[in-house]
Length: 324
Image (cartoon, rainbow, N blue to C red; front, side, top):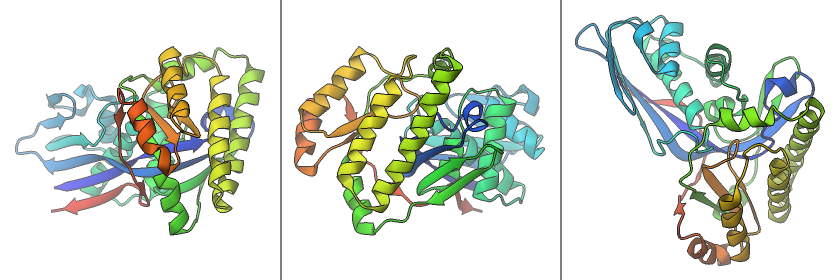
């Protein structure tokens, strides 16, 4: 039996510039961190020659080609695993469409467990590259590449997407004191609204090419500036850039936000939050706010209809945590 554990991520700035349609024209960049919310994949030898999968539903099939779950089917096809296997998935935050990179965390965790079960070791870079290949090339998801690299590598990172297709993950090294200060000034709330990133990103594609490129260039520029705010340990500047990034993201159009999300956002500001953003492509999922510690209680009371989620930064990426 093998168990893999992959963290989810919070993206602070730069989303959209990780789309291949953009970074092939102009380099993209994002700043993100992994958090202590995880996807787990357990893999074991099955008693008979069937393939049994347990996630939101249970599948028992005789051949890999019969598997309904696209990601697990693709991962097993690539690894040339044919039968006599059982895979179970669990997650701290099981819903898809939350903006925490949960779909890519599932893909990376599955790839790591399946390859480890076959006796193959994969580096974080290899895991991320293969996860991108499955999600984008094989399954045609209109998504970017930041999630796969963020969760495979783990930690607080500046991730660059170069015109030649290369992805560079650079850890942002800050003091433990500042890291704790930053973490303690962030509040995360689940809106209860789930959405598919392909729907949001599809709406953005209806913008003109010039509008898309200029929008994503600005997103990349903000990621560079936010990285510098972290290096200079400037919480006020970090908060301002988070706010600027959200304002700019809303200009992209599509279904990034709606009247209910805007109302929650304004309520948080009225209660003392300095800034915030909706995580992921938009349209639902999690709201992240930068809140001074003396205002945390006010904001939580003001948003009492939403579910607060305590979290801490995680410094590790996807890993194997059990082998028997």
